Every structure is written in structure tokens, then in C-alpha cells.
Amino acid sequence: MKDSFFRQVFWSRFRTNRFAMAGALLIVFLFLVSLLAPLITPYGPDDLDLYHVLMPPSGTHWFGTDDLGRDVLTRIIYGARISLKVGFVAVGIAVAIGTVIGLVSGYYSGRLDNILMRFVDIMLCFPTFFLILAVIAFLEQSIWYIMIIIGLTGWMGVARLVRAEVLSIRERDYVMAVRALGASDTRIIFRHILPNSLSPVLVSATLGVAGAILTESALSFLGIGVPPPTPSWGNILTAGKEYIEFAWWLTLYPGLAITVTVLAYYLVGEGIRDALDPRLKR
Amino acid sequence: MIAYLAKRILLLIPLMLGITLITFAVVHLAPGEPVEMQISMNPKVTAEARERLKKFYGLDKPLHVQYAVWVKKLAMLDFGRSFAPDNRPVIDKIRERIPITLSLNIISLVIEFGLAIPIGILAAIRRDTLFDKGMTVFVFIGFAVPTFWLALLLMYLFGVKLGWLPVSGLHSLGSEAYGSLRWLLDMAKHLLIPVSVAAFGSLAGLSRYMRSTMLDVIRQDYITTARAKGLPERTVIFRHALRNALLPVITLLGLSVPGLIGGSVIFETIFAIPGMGQLFYGGVMARDYPLVMGILVIGAGLTLIGNLLADLGYAFADPRIRHGQGS
Image 1 (cartoon, rainbow over the protein chains, first blue to last red):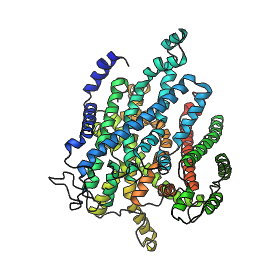
Image 2: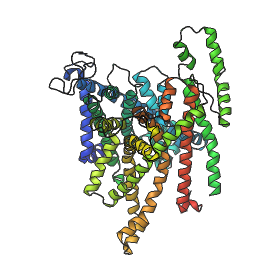
Image 3: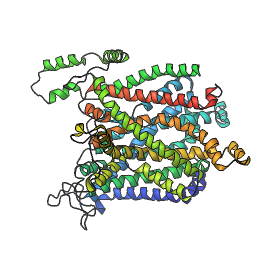
Image 4: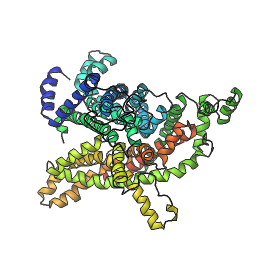
């Protein structure tokens, strides 16, 4: 993507999309909030207060307190850190693997392509959540493992996308020209093909962040995700399920946080898609 | 058509082998052994007993030998015995759970497709109306809401607050004594929340997909021709456009299988439904290798078959493929 293209065309299109801009602002807001968490919250995420357990929302605790008297709003704000981290690292891993496999597969085609794509087919057959569960449960509970495993099970879509792009770019005249000039395969792939095949990846990565956040929260909800006492939106919900009969606020607010965040990434992802290629706009 | 069919079926063999290889690798390369699990609960086990236990489960042999033994048995549909204390054949355990998960998924699939297709079509032909815009918003929310959270909220609202519906299990206590009609009604009541949440989760994506394929079709020349001939709009949409717009949906049906099976873990845990997901979760926690591997292979195999059926359905429905033109 050329610099001028980005500024003139992409940005001017993206800016006029009200939904996408709202999503982008929301993501910026979430980043700020999670960065500044210690400054904006009067409580610590692990401050116990056994005299005020399961208190409904009030002036002192806007979102109420949990079963150990911890402030729910504070824990949700700190939980945003986990979600952002998981989303970006997991998708980073998935995009890196997917891009490499897609590039190699599309550029060299033939037998190697066939083998790699069958591998993708096989990976896509597994119910992803089962695969993640099978591995995660055998490992020590840690946020790093979660990010890695979500990344390792989420690259197949990117690989297919990149491969399709490469297949069409490979035959274009400018690639022929570079090859005729004697450029090496590596140079052609990384200098000339990769930059031109990244736009669909950008869209799928943005949507992927949303998916990774959802997966992490589901894992933490099942009790095999982010280990307590570290607050994550999913593990706050675990307590929420436990006390759903007397403490609705423990369930309502963390779930809203997930929904709003995921929604923001979807809106931005769709916005990027429309801005990159208005023909696709529907 | 027959050559195509043969090719597809032959391709199943390497894919199935790949599935077993990945399954085996995932389960065996992860740290922590099933034997350790049993020992940690009982510190009095000696080193010798531990070796005996390993030998009993065949875990003392090198990995490639273990794999070969396992695959050879799989080829004869022998999934081995569970490591759990009951030591029952894995296939029996799966067989009693699979109907529950499958029927739950089929019911939600029917609801999902039944709602998403008309919604998508309506949104496409009434493009940019209030209905279309409302649906777009609904779709985005549907994408973003974590299904397990929605399940919790509905449980709270209908189960706890209003008390209209039961919140867990498949049957009420003492339902064995009910007449068959009452028994069925009782089960339907138990299934209402899980099934609607499951359907809602994928409704969004499908209806959006349906809308965009329908929009694609409507733009084609032959639709313009049909309109130019003076056919009523109803005929144009339902006789000419709909058929082609429905084709890609067949493929989607096959693709949605793994997601549904994977999602069952969460639903079955929340609602205490004794299905495959719950079985798998328990197996994973107890490091029950044969059970975990068996479910992974069956889950992936079901997806493979689902995709094949979808592709065949597509080939059958699309005359371009049926008559051997095109790809």
C-alpha cells in the first residue's frame, strides 16, 4: 500500500463510514483505559473487602462487587488489558503463520502447494474449540499458552486468502518484469508480492482479533483460560454463573464489555474492507 | 459425475490419515501423562507399579509404534478402551452421547437456516429500507454477543426471574413416569433456551451471507432480462433468483458442522446436557487419551463427511457441475 494511497483514498473513505469510525474510537478508548487502569480506578483489581461481598451497583461501586468484595468495574478495566493482549498476540501469530504458508503455497504451487493446502483442509476439519481444549488442558494455565494455541489454530483462513492473492498477483506483468530482471524468489515474494496481497489479510486480522477475544473469554469462562486471580472478562463471568441468582451485575457487565469490544473490531474490520475495495460494499 | 465422486471419496483416505496424525500428535506431544494423573491422586504408588500401569496402557512403547497400533485399530473401528476407572470401550461412551449432541445441533440448524434464509432474502430485495438496516444492526450484535453470556442471561431471565423454564439438564426429575407426550414436552422445555441460543449465534453470519449472495444474483443480466420480459417481481425473485442464490448455502451447511460440534462444549457445560462436548471436556481434564483422540477423530470425520455431502449436494443441484462442464 503506497503512502499516498493510504492517506488520500483509504483514509478519506474510512473516515466517512460512521460505524467504522465509532468502532475505531471505541478501540482507542479501550486502549487508553487499559493503559491508564491504575490511574482511573480507585481500587486495585485484587483488593478484597470481605465486609462488602456481592454488593449491588452503587455510588461507591458502580458495577457492584464480586464474591470476594472486589470492585467489578475495576476488574473489568483490568480485564480489558488481557483481552487486548490476547487478541493482538494470537492474531499476530495466526497472521504470521498463515502468510508464510499462503505465500509459499501460492508462489511455488505444484506439489508443495498441494501438500500445504491438504494440511489446511485437515486442520479445518477439526472443531477448533475441541482442538484448543485438548491442548490447553494439558498445559499449565498461562495467558501465553492461550495466545499461542489460539494463534496456532487460527491461521488457516489467512493462508487460503494469501494463497489466492498470490496466485493472481504472480501472473501479473510487473512480477514477470522483475523476474526477467533477475530478482531472486525471496525478493519477488517479499518485495513485490507480499505488500500487494496484504489488504485482505488486514480485514481478516481485524475480524480475527474479535474472534480471539471471544475464544479467550469462553476458555476463561470454562476455567481453563486466564488463571485467577488475574481478572479476565471470561473468568469474571464464571463467578457470575455461580451467583447468577443473587448477583446479576456479575454477569451483565463483563458480558457487555465483551460484546462492545468485539462489536468495535467487527465494525472496524468491515470499514477497512469497504474502504480498501468499495466494489465489495454491500 | 461418477469420476468426480470417486475422486472425492479417494481423497478422503489421505485426509482421514492426516486427521489421525494431527490428533495423535496433539494429544501425545502435550506434557502431562495419564499415568501421572492417577498417581498424583495416590502417592503410595511405587515406581514399579507406575511402569506396570504404563505398560498396561501401552504407553511404554515408542511414539511411532503407539501411533501405528492405534491407527490399525481405528481402521477396524476399534477406538480402544477409556483410561477412566470404568475402562469401557470409547466407542460405547461416544455412542450414548452423540445422539444428544447431534439432535440438538440439527434442531438448531433447522431453526437457523429456516430463519436466516428468509431474513437474508428479504434484506436483499428490500435493500436500504428500514428492515435491511435493522437487520444489519441485529447481525452485528449477533456476531459480537458471546453465546455463553447470552445463555446465562436467558437462564437468569426465564429460569430464575420468571421461573418459566428449567435451567439445566434434559429432563425433569421423575420424568420417567410421564406419558410420552408429557415427556416430550418436558424435554422441549429443557431444550428451548440452549437451542435458541445456539441458533442465534450463527443466525447473524448466515443471514448476512444469504443477503450478499442474493444481491450478487439480482445484479446479473438474466435477472434484468427476466424483468424486461415483464415477469412479475415475485416470479423473478422466487423462480429465477432464489435458486441460484441458494446454491452456495449448501456448502455453508457443510462448513458449519465443526463450529456446531465445537460450540457444544460450552452449551453442554452451562446447561448440564450430557452430550459429546461434556464428555470431551471431562476426558480432557482426566487426560483420558483414547477418549480424547476418539472424539477428535470422530468430530473431524463428521466434518469431512459433512463437507463431502455438501459438495455432492452442490454438484447435484448445479447443472453446470452435474453435466460435467466447468470444473
